Amino acid sequence: MKKVLLVVVLAFVCALGLTVPVLSLDGAVIPVYFEPSVDTVTLGQQFTINIVVGNVTTPAYNLTSGEISFEFNPAVVHVLSVTKGPYLASSGYSTFPMSPTIDNVNGSVKSAAESIAGGHVAPTGIGVIWAINFSAVAEGSSSINLTRAWLTEPPGMPENLLPVVITNGTVQVSAQGALSGLVTEGDGTTPIAGALVNLTQDSVLTASTSTNATGGYSLIDLPAGSYNLTVTKTYPERPTKNCAPNTTAVIVAGGTQTIQDVRLRHIADMYWDGEVNSFDLNILMAAWNTCEGDPGYNPVADLVPDGCINSFDLNVFSQEWNQVYY
Image (cartoon, rainbow, N blue to C red; front, side, top):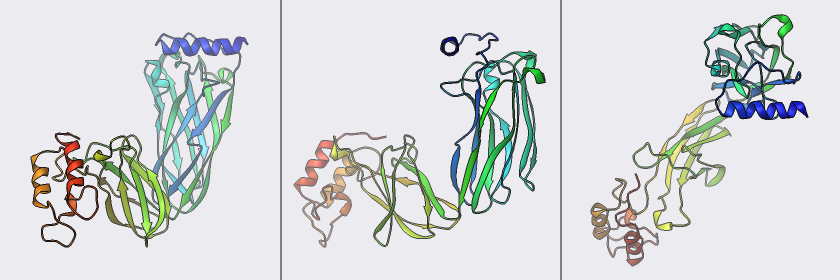
């Protein structure tokens, strides 16, 4: 019970930005683990996995220094770099990092170490102590196993080692392709979250996802080949604001990541300048009272769409008049 109360008190003190004194959490065992613990990547991809200390139930505490070593399968992944994370430096004191020895022949990284100047301690909490940048060099699976995870409290001698529990990681490298990109407004910079991203091949849906808060999407484990990428965005509470679907032909190569960014326009923004104004009205008027096959028919002005430019399209346009989207 004392241990639980002490963890809560320390978390509250850190949240207030106060200095945390050197305290003991009654020998609480600090989790040390990889994040993500299981990662699936594409052949040829560079990716980062973090080594994290502490979790919600058992935060790290009293750390003044740390040293890690780990092993991996060099036939599947290589380590490009190992850089210090922000956790120890979050103490506000200077730190001294020591670069590890990276061996991509035998599959090991030895003695990545960092110490806080003056024997001070890092704040109690959760944090990244090392960030590992990998490259996927072949199809297959690689375990990432910590062979050393030394965390010490002041003064940082062998007798000052803190108790830890280690959770190792796994990386799966796929030879299939991947497709990713950003979905934005017409300006190419304003992200569109929640857009539906569909990938079809020969009119058959192969994969589907939605864009995240920053407009990003990712589709993995795709067989090599030619696809159609269709992106749509609807606004159920205001359908007149819907975006016109954008379909793009893409080629996905095996073992690589293809980047395909997509821009969308709102249906009433026929001129594609981010607002509904007289330029759009001119386009609608030029195609007024025409249908598919007629001279002057413009599918961009078919806002409903029903194959003809008529009062239904005018109704949509009038509800979006003077709207500014970006």
